[in-house]
Image (tube, rainbow over all chains, first blue to last red; front, side, top):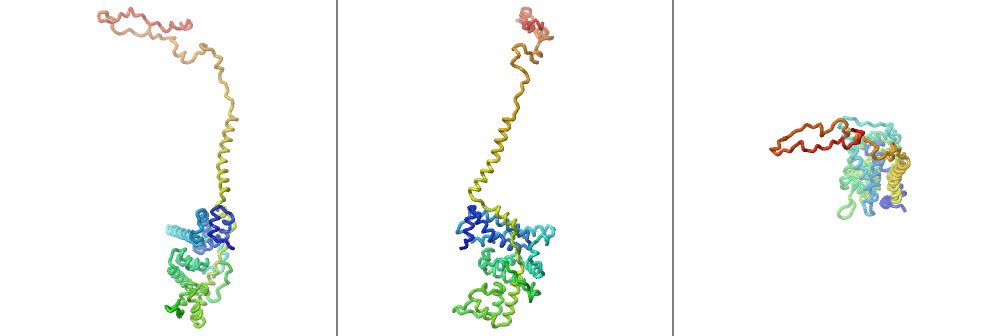
Length: 188
Length: 184
């Protein structure tokens, strides 16, 4: 039987290396993916993931079995770290320094190198950040609306409103892609 | 969604579109109480089917964005930051304390063993008492100046006023007298 994340956290807090390894295997890639879709930058996403896991390890020794659900807590931490980054970017942008993206430094460019991928990424990046986070949690992280609402500390109704507005905007922006949109990727 | 009587509420195209926008194209994500009616509507209505197709295309487009797996270096770094077992932590702490202590002990030992023997600059014990004349002795020696004989006389010498008779005063012995003939 698969051990729960919460039980792994308790063991990780005691310094159990195999528990730490399992948590990393289960969640590091997903946290990177979440941050990459939220921030639109792979290198930033990796920095965020490392930062998030430092917080995981700090919290582990104090983790109790009856604490919050690990995945909810983890994505809330990841979301807050991403939002901090977005706020800092805004500060930098408002200082007149243009935001530069280096496509060569972004391995994700290899993954969605085709035109559709780039257009989807651009459309997603243009969404307001809360709509983007809501869509990322529900579509990519396979979270139920209730869990996603808990991560975002919103009511389910508010989350569903964000999702509906986000999807409608994306549909309009991507309408040109229809029909025959692309090969479906196997992994999320 | 059901009526107050528990009957499934009739699905409208507007509500179907709202479900697609909120939950996506996968029926398993639709609200349990409404999915049956929604599927029925999609079976009957061409407009509903078109809406559903559009929602599917959006989901497929979103699925194009695939994140690459984490690089090995990042996995290693994250694991390096992970908590360590208590004994390992204590061992690390002990090692951390032992290194500076050992360094301090080595330095002290080196200082003790490598310090040179003090060299004797003068065989002071062989100088007899009275044989050694210090610089102070030389400076104080009354070679050319006798304080008692060279001082001018002053004060009163009238006996009627009760002054002492200076002639009777025994002149203090010159300090020259205390010295050996070597200095006189």
